[in-house]
Image (cartoon, rainbow, N blue to C red; front, side):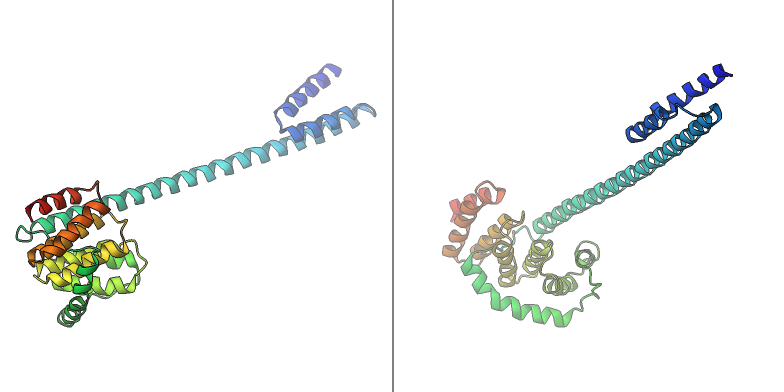
Length: 268
């Protein structure tokens, strides 16, 4: 009988070793106190200790299972966020490619726009008047209240439906409704390009100027400023064209637009 009791005690000791440090310390204290009383009392005490250890192990296993679930959930969120970010980046690449394609297809000429003060001032009033007339002739699509959704809808009028007048109306409404959106530089650039394609160069210069004046750190700013110079050159305002081209080289010296501006200056 004592031999079986020792085996049972040994098994309980092994269970104690698998428990958490705090549980193990309490268990050892409890076992050390089991030194008096009858064998039955000591067995009962050891059974209580064994049950406590079993509960502790169960709690630890449940905690580990909960932690693993939390980790799996976080991994899923990270993967979803990464996918959405990649989608946004890819969408931006496509938009820039479409902008460049539209620009190069406008009768072989490059449109103008940027932050040159003289060009922006001359274009401001004309842009307002033209914008009002365009708004009257083309109804803007209903806005949803979400900046990204409404922006994509306006761009779709250009890239998919080829409804350029409606796109102008939609973009003009969008820039007023969502002044804090990160797509503001893109929207103003689109307006500059669309007006240039319509032959309204003053309006075009106004919106291109807005890109550089208000969003000088935008990737479209160097090209927008360069296009202001092109418009001035096409209007035979050589002095302003030179000033804008020089500003492109000074403000964005490492850009492709600066290289094009240098070529334009050489031909003036």
